[in-house]
Image (cartoon, rainbow, N blue to C red; front, side):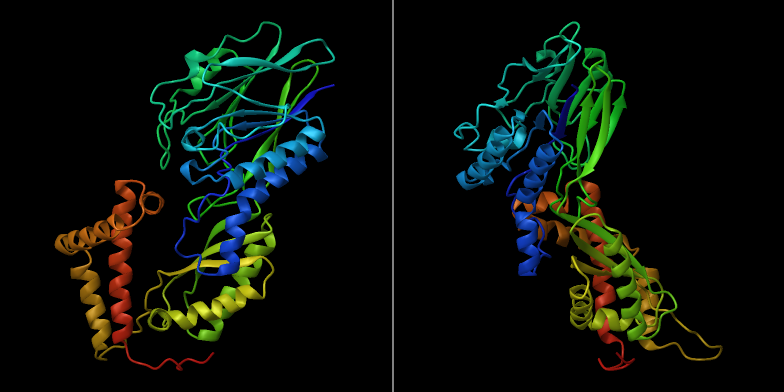
Length: 426
């Protein structure tokens, strides 16, 4: 019989909400419970597929935010696996090291948590007589500036060797450097499969041997877009390893751009939005789709969209409410006014001001520095975890400042523009 296992990582159980835009209480509740539901679906998958084991490559918890209630939930799910004879292998990641309950929870006997010294555990003996070993090492500190690879034993001769490692590899944007090592180093170590964790985006780094970062099984905000998954791995009796991806996420964060170029009527704009939302949600694999909607393009409606932002949001939320599993996280406006200049006609004063702002104010170094300083000041007032989410690096801060300057001037100009809220029809 083959050895079949599910490989996951970075569940961040009960991670706090990281988006100020989740104003809808029902939506907030979905996101708040999504990490738990992802684990439930992973356990269901293991049971349905009669897997031999579940490998969790770190960051089960979310650091100091972890409560005993979270740990008890984990214990209940692992006992479900124990009841079906499915083993669990766990390594601690950097967030687990911060948890106060990591060492306090009593797990079922079928669950093995690797300690700070690397160890090899026999997971199964194949029909061919070949043993399957799982190697793993945890780290007791949230900081691991040196590679943990030297801590691993060499591969067991004649066996199938699977390594579990929580690592940033050579580094990734938005992730702390943790137990760095290279793909070439992992290949050279001689294991047959590397079950990695830490980076939240799925990537198969190599196929001979398989070096797999499964990504997190459930996104937490708009920076973790797309339907998330786990890896389902089969080791046949000859030791050959095959890999499949299985979608897991309860809620999928997505970015959706709707081009309003050429649309001049409010009703037509809403129709375009309705069609885009219906298509996107209809194609999604997740039960819930949480959208950051961007309205773009050159349209005479640009002024109204900015001026009547509250009305716009209410209308779009109403459209989303009629589509199963559709939620709006935020509506962004990048559209510009479509100027229709006639020969000999005088330019509208606000349009003339807009042209001056676009040509002279926005590109000015002094203006950009003032906006950057204002954005940096606001960021300093935010909690560290939210600040890290919004602006993880210098480039992200500069992008925030640019967008703030652009949207701020557009907002002012929109309110200077003439016309009442009722113009254009609904």
